[in-house]
Amino acid sequence: MPQFFEIRDPIHGFVKITEWERDIINQPAFQRLRRIKQLAWTDMTYPGATHSRFEHSLGVMHVVTMLFDSICERQHDFLSSRELRYTVGSLERLRCLVRLAALLHDIGHPPYSHAAEETFPIDPETNEPYPHEEYSAAIVKFELADVIENHPSNHFRFKVGDVTAFFTNGACRECLLWKDLLSSQMDGDRMDYLLRDSHHAGVNYGKYDLNRIVATIRLIERPDSDGYTMGIDEDGIHAAEGLILARYMMFTQLYFHKTRVIYDYHLVEALKEILTECGGHFPLPTSADDIKEYLKWDDWRVGGAISEGKGGTHGQILKNRHHFRLLHQTSEIPSIPELEDIDRLEGVLAPLGAIRKNAEKSWYKFKQLNDEILVLSNSGSARSSVLPLSVRSPVVQGLKSVNQSRIYVPIDKRDEAIEILKRQQGEGT
Image (tube, rainbow, N blue to C red; front, side, top):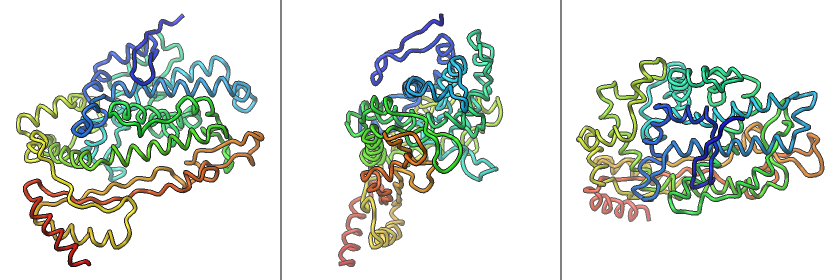
């Protein structure tokens, strides 16, 4: 019998891990996540939001396991059918693999998480910054290969590529069928971070009925193509709506909070100064040596550099909490006149050092059926009984994308900027 250990978690109670998973968790590359805050500088507004990527990674593994186990229990006959041909042994193997992928999917995050991704180097193939998933895959490949591939508990002979395929563009059969557990509109990642971020920030916006989603999740045959995807029974519609609404509320009230947004801006500008000797960006995710250098970067190192004055003007702003102040913002769904007004204001205030930050987000993807959460009618399991959540739910239909613009000004220019704003508004009446 495998040996299990328990880690007490504020969201899920006890999170069980195996000896193999514990050995992976104890690796320095994974322990680094203790020193990376989940929500960057959000604790400057919500003091309790000091939790880390470490606990979130454990939580994602736990939630993904709940979802996987529910599907296996409720759809055992379907999984063992002639078409899919899963056996008890193959499902045990898959469960282990999915847990490892969930545990390691965020191991590549930079200091202060998503906020610092603007300082990732450019991938020449896409002309975009490397995504953090590429760093996760590289860390698993260069730092964790031995503890994964050569561990005595690796009875399934996993290779690191089997794990990383779940959070990169892997094309293995298991990935195509099961990666929705990690990356979809109803995945274990967001199910954990909404509850966790809400708890630590001290707000209720991120709460939804996780247990109901677990009880109603299932594999559903795609109505427009061959293959399967994650969906829900009809009885889970309201729980799925709750998840989407929780995400909407968390973004508008917490992730896009006016102060949190400007702190992210100051962090990125300070990082550019701190990383000057490295070319202005973090090391590439393309070699073992670069990854070793990358792993030396965490919140502690960046915070120390800021304390030592290496972050330039914006580092001093962070250190002294003299962040730029919000002067003006549009509504969440701005009209054309609003956008024209803020365009003019941005130009007028530019000499004062004003900056504009845009908060853009879609809460639910409607464009492609493959992106939708599918709902299976209680009346049967035929393709004709499967419909997108956006068709079944008036709540989801009514959600609009946010595209809010904000103008911030340096604190010592605020009074002057307010007078300019008053004149602009007076001229517009």
